[in-house]
Image (cartoon, rainbow, N blue to C red; front, side, top):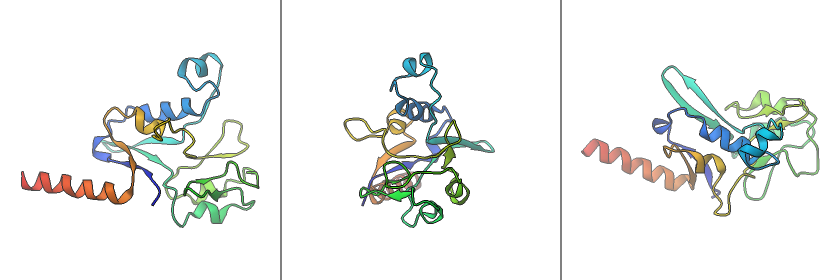
Length: 165
């Protein structure tokens, strides 16, 4: 099973470090100073939202049955062999019809700065250890990168510890 960026919502403090790290990782400069001085406006692919007093990051879940792939009229949105759903690097080009944006149940697809293509998590921001920039930047450990089954097992252990404490 492919690794996923997984979220521990109870740990998110809404600092937006993940958003900044993602945007910088997708900039030409690949560092904050260079991106700011160079006048770049790279888009983040992870978004921190607030619902009442709760805050949490949302990003593409790379759905097994991805509605964005089915909705893409050009075929630009596709699944790579590693399970990543992306509109980058395929045979077709995004025409900014925004069908993917409209059908994404997580609101994880946005338009680029110029309004010429859809932008979403492409997993292209991993460091040499394979960890995405958003996960590495999270100061509270709200974002993790791993197998879904391992994540579920850890969550069950956490619940048991709290209940039995």
